[in-house]
Length: 259
Image (cartoon, rainbow, N blue to C red; front, side):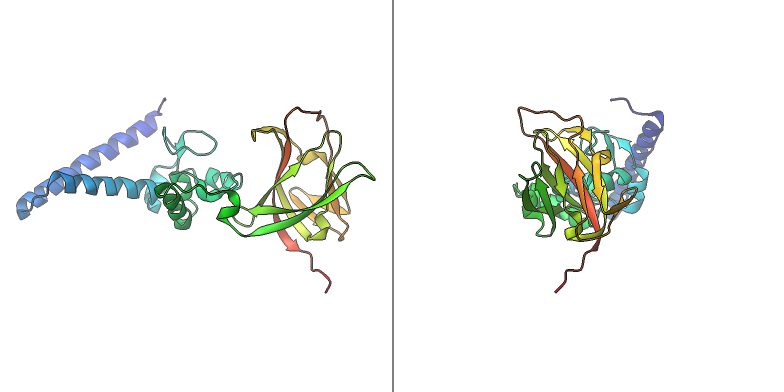
């Protein structure tokens, strides 16, 4: 892996500072007449490295921002660490943001860090529904006119109020989302078409037919309870394996249900 000259220069400076610290510490302990066995020093070094990887302070985050590295890579596989801007984007693409890598979790808060450490330490196998009991409802209609079936689904909570939901794909038909049932205002950040392996096959954001919905960029205003958005099967064919629509959205104003 190629490393830029700028990063290499910073690495050299850090290594030189580490050597200076070791020399000063050795001189201090010698003058004080204190000695430490090798295992104690080794444990202290491991603790320092662990703290740096999982709980860096703000200055360390800034200094090591976008360092290229082979491990703890971000979701985009860019081989960088402490890329806080990308972390916020990546956390909305995962079914469980608490399972991010060490360098990602610190940018979101210690609660994410501790959760990741506990899962790794005890080798916990947790699914999306295990991480949060917070959901957002979404009613959809699937099938051709006169043969459609209405289903109430639950979107999983991600981070910062965003939710993730997988919608079925039926060849030759659209998926009608009855957004006005529960929301007056919402933000749709992503709407992708996925294959069975979860790989993105296409962006469906421009393939929405809106009914009684006013759109301004990613913001959608549902004008009534009957407001709906239909995902058109544009350019999609019949597949041998299951395919899905994946939407990431954030409710902004919930519709007040009449009592």
